[in-house]
Image (cartoon, rainbow, N blue to C red; front, side, top):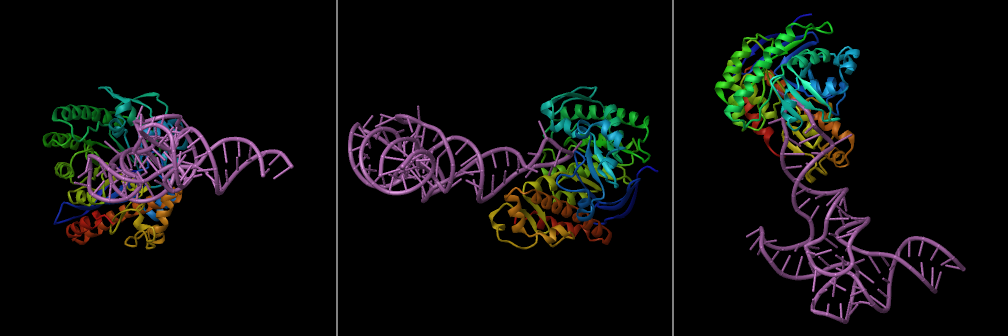
Length: 379
RNA sequence: GGGUAGAUGGCCGAGUGGUUAAAGGCGACAGACUGUAAAUCUGUUCUCUCGCGAGUACGUAGGUUCGAAUCCUACUCUGCCCA
């Protein structure tokens, strides 16, 4: 059992895109990669079998905050970790709950010590400290676990972003200290990824990257983007971060994004992505396809019996037609949510798979520029 | 045949003299969603007009009144009860 490694195989000449292979104790991950989000130990509406066969997921996410509240550490530990509980034998990455510090802002309080949350389930109070978050993630058993950070809103002023970053970096030291003084819980190696913060401010981001690089982690993450700032700002900051993070370690851009966001950020040097968009928007009738964006609820699809998407290698997307999926969604049939989620995830996986091919073949940039226009079209 | 309750916008259903183009729900039609408090949320939904506004509307036909979905009369239809 060994720490995560990253083998860089190709670097694009026209852009900063890279193709590589991450090796974990639960198998390999071909990068660039998209990681479906399975917050509570479930990629919503998609079975593990479907994740393997139809989506062809290589790694999925879980969330510390949610799993800690339910099913709770006792169950997770008794199961032998999340892999065992959900029968998922490929890699898992767990987010730290840092994003919940941001998104549950109505029910939490921040201090130097940590973040005091009020459970959205029963209102009970829980203190998350960097140490506790490391301990919880050890028990959940993610192959990759994330540092506990604060994710300030995209519009944050310099002063707030600076003090927030200070807190995040102090928390980072405590995360590593705890992580390094505890052991892998289930026999395979767990890896801690630190997270760059600093809002939209260049010097803060640069300082953050430098600080984080010194940790010499097996991979690094960029957080605090696509949280309200303009898209161009996101690209600008992302590029700056990529330029200041180690070349030979995977770079993970957290929470991004649309299909076009993903290929644009691949072009800037990002290797890993996660986002709720394919599943959440899928459940809400928005389909991302090879030809553009579809709101499958729209009347125009009522009698369109063509496949949801025959431009990707996914049996579900090829098999079901638009009129049927519209009917299912309008009827609030559970099958509709499943099909939409599987299709969107398969499309996302297809994007990163093709991106990788084009990076290796050397025509990534022109392919990307063509696809970005095509995918954004509203059908 | 007798009695009784009722008839409201695509549907269900509030409203019993003016603040009612008419609550609410459903349906329909759009929109939003980026490390998931989201199978959620928002908007529109009589006609004409970009809008201001105007015109038609609460079974049908009359009537009372300054004013009626709301009161009166007749009719039509529907539910229920009794024969």
